[in-house]
Amino acid sequence: MDAHVAQLQMQYRNYILSLYQQGFLDDQFTELKSLQDDGSPDFVAEVLSLFFDDCVKLVGNMARALDQTGTVDFCQVGANVHQLKGSSSSVGAKRVKGLCINFKELCEAKNYEGCVRCLQQVDVEYKTLKAKLQDMFNLEKQIVQAGGIVPQVDIN
Amino acid sequence: MVMAAEPQFHVLAVDDSLFDRKLIERLLQKASCQVTTVDSGYKALEFLGLREGVEINDPDAVSTSPVIHQEVEVNLIITDYCMPSMTGYDLLKEVKESSACKNIPVVIMSSENVPARISRCLEEGAEEFFLKPVRLADLNKLKPHMMKTKLKNQKLEEIETPSKVESGTVAAVVEPESEVEPKQIYLQVVQQEEQTVSNNKRKSVEEGLSTHRSRPRFEGITTAV
Image (cartoon, rainbow over all chains, first blue to last red; front, side, top):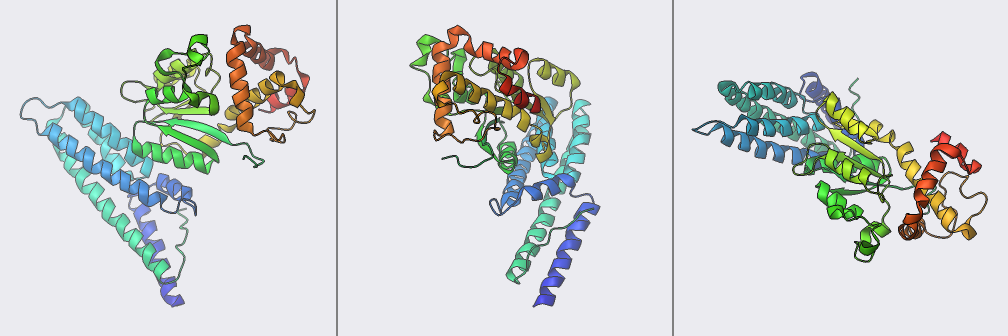
């Protein structure tokens, strides 16, 4: 059983490292993890849940704003991008944040095609991240169920 | 019953985003602070007893003012800048323009690095301006600011209730050695402040702290801060 736990732990470590290396997460995510403790054991999960709820809401708002057959309110789109940029930055969602930075510029330039494309990318990106983090949480659960402790992964 | 040796700071956090409120709350808890979160500048003013510009030290208003202000001490206000209807800057102004609350340190947070915005806030009296995402290290910088208000309140308590003062009490940094619960002390302080505000007692104490050092025993504390 120990070998199994050790294997799971190694898998977990490698997985986390790959998420950072591939740019899905940045050091803000590390900061969030450090805020979790015995008193608040589900903090990261709760914050991520709020973040993904935000994503659904904001992407929905932007899709509606860009779907106007009349003039598109780029300020409205921009306001939503601003919010998404803020929360992705606070959660360590590096790729989503990066897309938002581009998106903001496209809104300011009132580039309709660009905005539509960027919104699609944002949609794909946050869903990808969500799936990856779900895998991460599943690994954590497996480790605990196998009687092990979830290791602290040192990114540096 | 506050028995801990380390002072408990109470922070009022203001942000319209639930997500950001959750984050700042956890950060503050991790920094060993008591936290109250509100989602707007108006609610913050309500909590502070400054709603609709009615100040607590207005003698006519005292009897009708919300009880909250008299029982809860706020050592720091941390607010988001970008909020609908009332911005963090507006809130900062209201706080700094009120006699009752102007000494509470205010910190502004923003996800945007706009130098003009930052200097405007600092000029209006904000202690710090943090770029989001705020980190634990940023909050630890705030302890000296919060310590100032706690010490100030303790000093006021000493002035108002000299019989309670022991020679060692205030020299030790904020150790609640007296039997009276700290909360009650602040309650007395606030009530007496309100009754005697026309004497400008608080103002003279403030000046004493920053300039004259009229009470030598405080010198070490203020400079240490």
